[in-house]
Length: 370
Image (cartoon, rainbow, N blue to C red; front, side, top):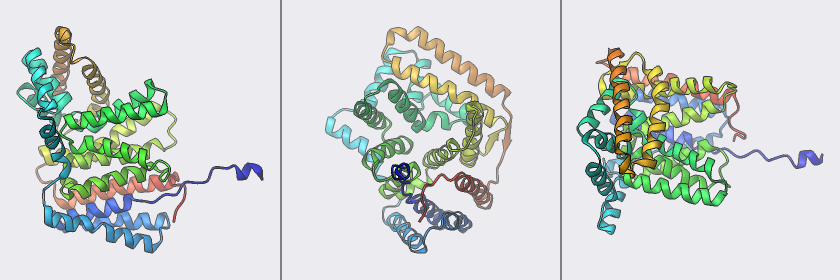
């Protein structure tokens, strides 16, 4: 009896992901194509699988209509995109421009272009060429979705620092600073907002799906047009997929990373096609191989780019990356997809979403339903 009393109470799940799904469906159905209404199958399935009360379901549906009204009035305006400019105005100085200027002055053109692309998402000269080649390899999200980099940076800080509040302060400060340097891009803001919400509501929301969803809803309310941003879609799509896969009973870490690479590639596939009208045959292999390479390169340059006296070593690293990317492109095989219609997009997303939905249900990721 005593053992049962001491048993941990299951945490309540709010299913905020339902609101997010509704928002996406309404905006895409109204401003892209009515075909996206077929995606309503996903929240309906969620309602019946997790026995969500009809009252809650209707409330979430009504709340999801708010961004539709906001979009009608503010159109493409996105509040977070202007925060960096406002801070520059207050400081009378742009840290982003200052760092880019430092890089351009201290390094040769080849190294500077790569550092600007990798660290600041600035595409210039050979950096833009590298960016295009990564699109052809179907792995552009590894370098432009900086949220992956920030998440990895946060993991490193948590590994190195054991004092709870200190690691939170350092992580939050660095993520905010880096988001500012990236002009609060959608993907970097995702990590920042999710982290802030996890600190604010860690006692209220034990389910990480709720925290991530709430952060996404907050960003959408700051500017509903963000749902049409490829970076936003890929970033949150990959995040929810990874959260689901990490809960699966996969004992092999290698197998888990392979599954994550496959799913991430599939989720990003439609957006890569829309950007480039083609997809690499080796997309999954490229994702798995280059994912680790670029993460290590990112950490290396983040820690050493100020050490301009290491310029010769940096040039060797950059030249090696260029060689690897160029070699991969020579071996690359592209499939041209000119007609990626709304019907095909809807069908694709429906299959992916329903697959993740049933995996979520099968392995009991929620602890308490309504």
